[in-house]
Length: 139
Image (cartoon, rainbow, N blue to C red; front, side):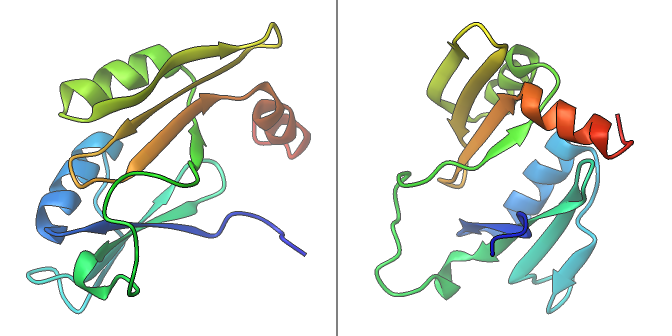
């Protein structure tokens, strides 16, 4: 039934500032902006091996009752070096939410931050992700 991650949506009071911050972090501009680049209410980046989507939406469009503080589920993005990525994120102004954590002896490592816009961004080194990538001929 659930076939794969399609889009993660983050909220931001200032979409232009979020666009600049995420463009710097990711090293790419968004591929999609609506209604236009000068006053975007929604932007979207395509990321990584499977071109998953990270959307940033003007917080004024959040559903009634949506949380305004970090909490709930954490979506983790696979990275090759959690420590280096965590260092870059904090140097850019993100605040540590979950410190670098080794998860057993199988090589799993996680961390998460709260971005400057109040969203939780999880990062993980996930050996299973790499196995699937290799099985799909993308390693």
